Length: 204
Image (cartoon, rainbow, N blue to C red; front, top):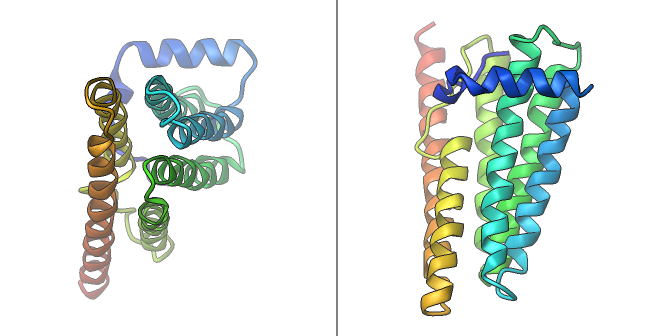
């Protein structure tokens, strides 16, 4: 399977953490599953964030831990030589649940559950288009503007900005704006990937 290009993968601390996880007895597939737990943590924190703004900090941490798991499972599998026959399944399927947990949780947390569901369904669609291209024998397309790392970046910004806003004004405009942008940006990503897929197929 094609790998998402990530600058973070080249950081010196990444293989150190990956080796530590391997020494602890964890497998790449287990780390992939752990990402769902981190995403659920973020989604639940978003859902109840009106109870306490500090839950927005927990949501931001959950999102970043989810991304860290997504990074480390691949490093453990490829650089660590721990690839398995089911690795591609564990690499991709948990991401779909993670996106839904975070985006839907955020949507209900700010009182706009429909926007959360729209963003989540579009996020799943971006992955479908990427994998469809791969199934058709083309390189998988990771283009944005709202691929997974971008979506999680903006949701983290929304969580942190929302925390500050909640302390100052008790509003949640920042998180609502972040969620709306993720929905719009993910829709644009779906259109871009579809058009690029069409062009690639026609160029064969």
